[in-house]
Length: 214
Image 1 (spheres, one colour):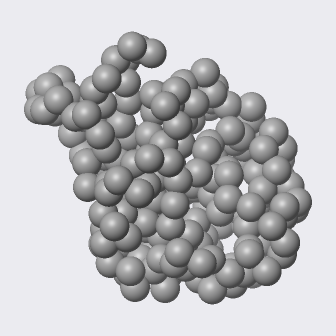
Image 2 (cartoon, rainbow, N blue to C red; image 1 turned 45 degrees about the vertical axis):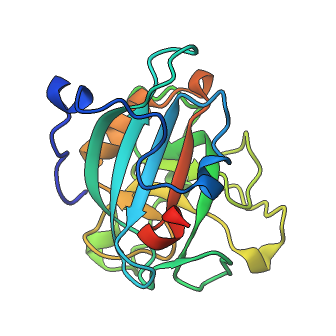
């Protein structure tokens, strides 16, 4: 299962500030957030070569709302070698950028996801992996990096070619770095699955702090 619990999230946190943009994200990536997006999963990596990160969910209450509200945050992990702006297959780094979120799934039954959800034993982590990793893919949200939208998370299609890597997901945490995905607690994944809504055009903004601010 996951590691760590959600940090706070109450009304006091929501009222802390009027956020006109996603905090600590520079103009370059801010401009890539679609205007109609009302849900942003921000992944703040500690350092370009670090596997430690924090996931924060920001939301807007309506199509006319101009301010973001911080919903919740969780400790998280990213690629075991950190981050890259030029992701390659098996580089063990997570890709920096803004990506849409459209599809979900996992080994476990649908917990009430608003995304199309594919329950499949084919997503089971191989049992030659350490036992601590066996539940990594119990819940998965596909990050639309080099994948075909509208397909299960484990669809092998790579529109930009195999060399650019793929299968970059939000999934459950095993307490350390990943092959390139972002991982967080089971309760965090359940919250994201039940909250993120295709009608709100959710995206993930992800990277180390320096690249996010660039």
